Length: 232
Image (cartoon, rainbow, N blue to C red; front, side, top):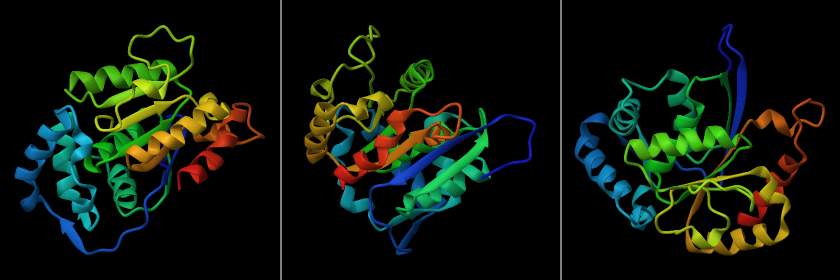
């Protein structure tokens, strides 16, 4: 989605790992108030991934329901139209590319998705300071089922050094540095880790870094397709 704006644009790619869904049932505003409270309680618990994923596989969310969840979890009045459009595609198991102005709320899309869908959302991002800010802001909202793995020399106490310290039952959102995908041992460990949880989505932040013709090209981004294929 491109908006006419003087703001700089940035790009993010969401690649669904789950199969596309049909239009069997729509979750609407009038159905969701009680469920939102229950879901919020489960996400704040220590094992949020133990909600049965099967109970979600035939559910789609109406726009009003998505606005309600956004208010409940992120304290915003409502989602922007582009956020709703992308979220709707992701919740149907479809992939999407979002090109939106900087600060327009791209990260909120995968954060809210990770709350709505039991299992694991993987975010590949090179922006470590931004990820630290996101983890802090989520924890301030009471959402603590978030982890990040960067490099072995990271000193940040909120950053994990390996998957051994990541609980598959309790983690809904996992941030990875793209350089991790070039380490064969890590990819093999993640493949084994994924057997203990349901990987629903891979979100690629700063997706323009995949272009070999761009000045922001990062070779590690070329490993994302292989990483996803190993998880299928």
